[in-house]
Image 1 (cartoon, rainbow, N blue to C red):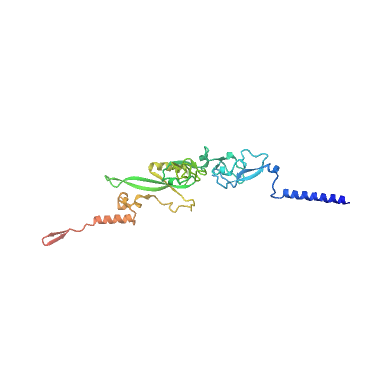
Image 2: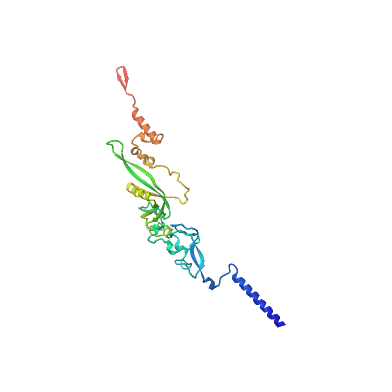
Length: 308
């Protein structure tokens, strides 16, 4: 009798132990066994929808576990690659959130056709030569946005036979243009992030950039290259936080006589050219009045005096 009782108690203990082991093994969040984890692999996916031509940044990619029996061709598995390797790459096509990223669908910086893939649809890449002032001493980097200003001197003749003078003018040619590359450095590459690579301005002893590539429309590319023949092209760096339309977007060109009193005579051939009510117009009016107001001359003839 006692033996049967012990057998019953032992059997119950075995059943309870198996139940506890099963609970610990299969409860939510329980660690998988080595055999089970070996059948799954984490692959690189889009963390959110990515449009074609998107320049990948940190947070654009993530990991998703899938069955490792037949991983898709070209999939990027954790352990073989890292997310940091693809920061700055360009997506060749649209990706939905959670969709698997393949190596063939990305263009990495340095690849032969990276610049063409990074351009927005319908845009062109236009490269101009720059000096230290035009590149903000190398502080304009890929991914920044700039305005393009044309500064030129125009010859003018006030009257037939008069000496030819120069009339200076500055005008905003293009607004809010994206910088695609500085020399051979693209947005998203380590050099563009502030390292001391040549031509990026990242290091104290780095050489100044010699070229800047801008993303423009077909028409703006023609205007830019024509402006290079007419005068000097300057670049101004825009703020990262753009509050919308520029307050001075509709303002016309700035003339030399607006910024330098020394050029008033050369830039204003007549008082009629100056805007009414302006300081330049008032000064011209005073000079004209002084030129035409001549003091009377008194001529004495004996006891008579005549005024002429």
